[in-house]
Image (tube, rainbow over all chains, first blue to last red; front, side, top):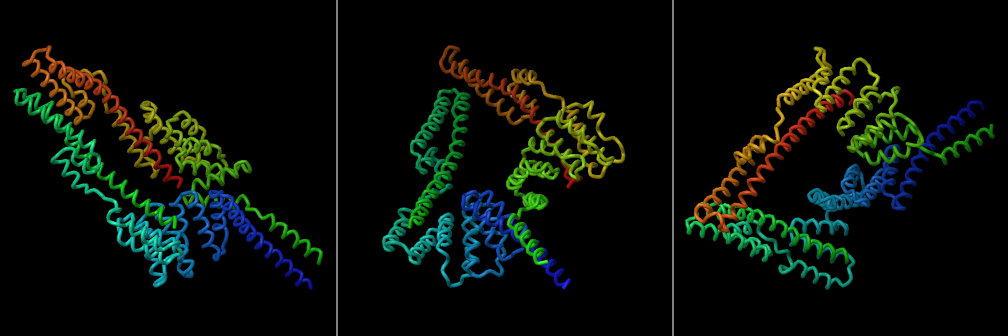
Length: 288
Length: 281
């Protein structure tokens, strides 16, 4: 009888120790969830990490890491969100869970401007899902990535696939809209940097005009022309030093400056047009 | 016996309900956050503990997190609170002194070093840090007195002691450039003041600019006379370039001196930092 009582007490205390530590971790998790619901994402991330540090319960790891990544996503700290999601081991996960994590990873990489990594995640997901469709959100991310990479044809194809495979009001209208958005007329007309530079090399200011800055181009043309004329006029009137220094000397400076400006302008215009086009596609697809 | 079992169960359940992490566990967790480079999160946790405990670990970890976030003044303040009984005492004090040194608060840095209670092994490190501060202050006499001269230098200090001596020689051998001399040189030969300041390219460009405007003015003056509009225009441009070049030369010397001092300071700071990382990490 004495041994039985002793065994009871040992069991109770061992269970007590286990349940106290288990209780602590569960409390941290509940607190984290509650902080997350209240929008206190920074503190929630800490509590999730506390759970991950102290708990040995592997079954909850994926969910907790996923939730922690959500906190960083809400805080727009995408690098940290990616780092958290990368900690998830996906070897033994079910296809659904795998898809859930890869979906989130591709989105976070895209938002963190790591386009190539986002693309790799989507390729891995496609490989895993084999013949199944990609999740709706991942398909969207892939369209955005292809737009960023200027692969308009593939992006259009996927945009149509997105409309056809998802519940969209008035599919015909949506497909027509996609056709018009990706029509040759609507695609961003990107300027050739080399062409802009060459134009400005032969006719100063024409590179700026080619980039759409007519006023700036005209001014540059007149400015360079004026110094060229001054140089020639001074030399013709036998003011050789004045012609060389005040005319051609200044012309050399404005001419080289004009070339550099043209290159910068072409890059800027291309970036603006590309961004505007991508934003119009993103806004439309998200509104569906 | 039944009563005892019921009472024990009740107590344990109550304990479970009130389950809270102990301070030791919290410190373990903060240490984990710091190791994972999550310094902002570590600081939030440390702030939570700040009112609840006066532990040395708290001040050390806070100092380290702030140091990693480059908040050096706050870091130094936190490091200084670590008591001498702590295992982190020496590391904290030396890093506090370094943080003050980095923020050019040399007086506080020296005060911290002065107060450190040392083991014989660390005496040389203290002497080395003192010599580094003296060199930063350009107090060459103190540097000469403080610098490590003995043959038996700690292995972690050997390279840095040599480097500091080299930096000392470089500073001593450089004659500070004179602003008035640069101005005078540029007044006589435009651009030469900038070359004297060590900016040869800028000097040649200025020389060509002033010379070309000068020649244009001379040509117009010779052919059209002094009262002609073109002579006055080019003459005015020449004057602006000529005076501007003198002014620029004076400032080039100032900038050149500042650049040299900044470069030397960065190298000294680097050399007094490395042994701290080697010895304490």
